[in-house]
Length: 344
Image 1 (cartoon, rainbow, N blue to C red):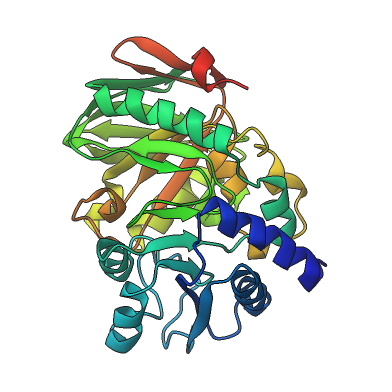
Image 2: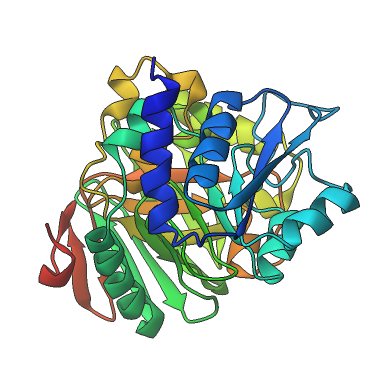
């Protein structure tokens, strides 16, 4: 277990990457006692660096579910807290507000938001740096210009995405830009196709992770995609039935919409982390989402990219040994980054 001194040291370096200024207002956003140790350490780090920090602690949500409920959080409807957060220079969120209108409103007011939730050893392992940002922003330029994105694999994946309808989102683990959100411990670039403009199939293979289940699958699952929606989920093993029944349980046809697509560039992350970690229940799968050379495929909500799909069912599925091209130029070749400017 990390000591408070170790946390304060690491979080001080994180705040420096975020270009926190002396006398800047820093708010740490918490839910009950979740990650209270992080909140305390960030408070100390910010104060030692000359900022004006304080903490907003919200009560636990009234309704919680064993199922993932993307976009729902304890901040919803709390106007005094939202208005205070909008006035911050930097919000350190140890609670989780991704895909929520509250996060969009806070960032829209100009506050920088940093989500910090992973176990401390993961934060240390995947601590960001400026070269990671450079490589991800290079990918952002490529993805932002692309008209067609294709993914394929030896396992049978072959899907085409008509791009250009949504902004590109980057995650390199820190934020020094007004109004920008990031997630400490991640490293990826992603966007979304035009609504209804994805067709083909994605074959999820053993070793690929379904993050909502917090595990790797053990039998192949084939997702057939027509006009931007998954229309069939097939496979001979339990995983296909599990994925199908889980998504159906939300009773929301928007759960089957294709959401973001992109690739991971975090060379310190590993695809097999889920198999060896001892803190699985405390994690949000940043290793799986960001490991170097993964193709990150997803379904469900797209509000973080400016869309209107706010379904509660979000399925992130990072794919191994999969290739990705932009307008015919190979970017990821069977899990290997093919562009020198993004390699390590």
